[in-house]
Amino acid sequence: MGVLDEDAFAKLLREEPDLAVTMLVEMGSATDERLRAAARALARRMMLDVARRGVARGRGIGRLRRLPARHGGELDLDASLPALLEARAAGRPPHLDDLIARDWARPELALCLVIDASGSMTGARLAAAALTAAACAWRAPAEHAIVSFARRADVLRPLCSVRPPGAVVDTILALRGHGVTALATALRTAREQLAPSRAARKAVVLLSDCRATDDEDPVPAARACPELLILAPGDDHDEAAHLASRAGARWLPLTGAAGAPAALAALLDGTTGRDHP
Image (cartoon, rainbow, N blue to C red; front, top):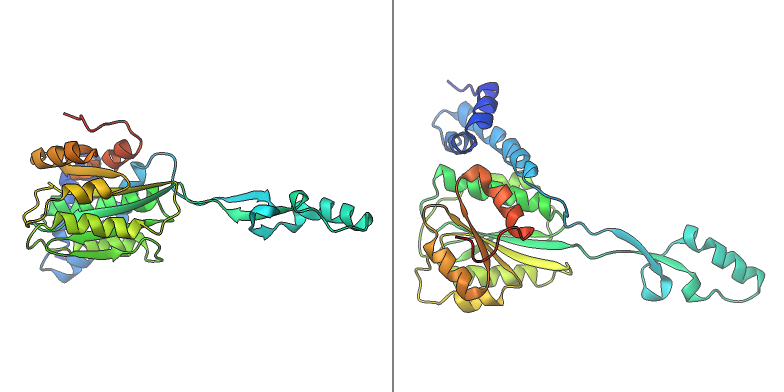
């Protein structure tokens, strides 16, 4: 009792990754306190590690760049020193075009993950949600938000936050499904989270079967998203395909929880389209 064999788990993860991640999430609710704590600690590490393997190139980090001082930024004294010395020797002020400044380029990518928590949050669904959140953290570390929703939308992580990915994974693994599926409300919340971003690309990632059960049509809210990507359950994706077709979104069915990071990468990198079968 209270013992988790990490070597045995690592072997299972290599051989049957979907079973392994689902089992680990379910062990996080064990009645044995020591086993529950060990499972949750391992889940945090494992989710981040598995998600990192599914991350492709092009992470959304702002980069420090050099530009003419007339465009703003902080003066780069080292790079501007020759122009400053030349101007001093000539007894004139330096020209702005000769001075170099430094500024942060805008991030390449900002993401908002929207997690449908309106139904039964089983081990597999929780694992897929946590892995997708961890993949978003690796893919867009500077700007990524996490929203869960049922009747209302709750922001688990604002767009620009110092909250570490491991803490977000903990929160997601504690979600319990309930209530109405207010899909339009969730998509509007995601768009509001992305609105302040200066990123070159902004995308909403919706993890849901897309079966809205309130009285509001989600299509207008879906079309208003800067870009919508949908990850749907592999055995229940008809509504997701329909919403994607009407909203001009791209989508993929998830065949297993462990494949969520790779599916997210495929959607972001454009290796699948809205006409996915």
